[in-house]
Length: 256
Image (cartoon, rainbow, N blue to C red; front, side, top):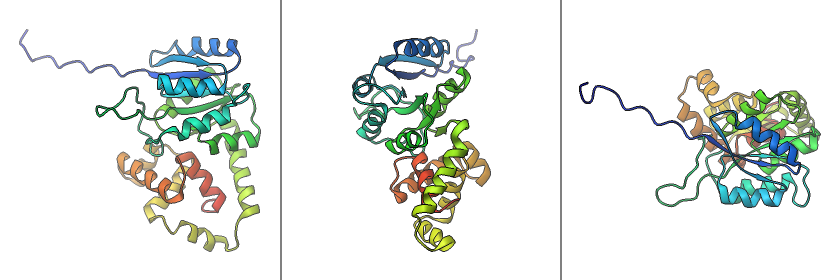
């Protein structure tokens, strides 16, 4: 065999590190068995309440926290808000997973939060997303939907359960109609004025539920360009991430 003829095998990608937060030990054990059947997922810890979820997220640096809502003591919404605001990262644009500190000793990105709950009440959906949750699934989701959801939020995308997406958007539009200032389309145009034309196009795509790759294909722009536009949209609309940017778009009347 001639030296140098064989390419060096690519290093395998690190699995997505998952923290499970649920006050029901049977639910946690069932989720662990389900997730660990997939080689690209690794359950690194469990928490029985929101306070423990916050502490373990800080200690273990998971990529994704699967968070129940109603837990004793600190609930899942409060825990999500604490985790989402602990330190900034690139969740607005979506940069994938991170498991280690950077070479300069910087903090790793904060975990992304996938809320998994029995309750599909509108207020819970709104509270979770406004707290900074990156995704929302119901416990009646199939195992395949849960695994796909974890991969989706770990990759930097937003996720709302298909069963509640349309109702969620309808409720956002209803609330916006009840609080919107006069001006109709002109008012929406004024609200969008800080955005460039291309940023406005990207925000409309986000509101349509498109992923970064789908936005890039629709607008015929690069994937990194999409990320840059989403970062700027979040900065200009004072929102934390792409999900909250969509909520902003509906509430202000930018889209309807």
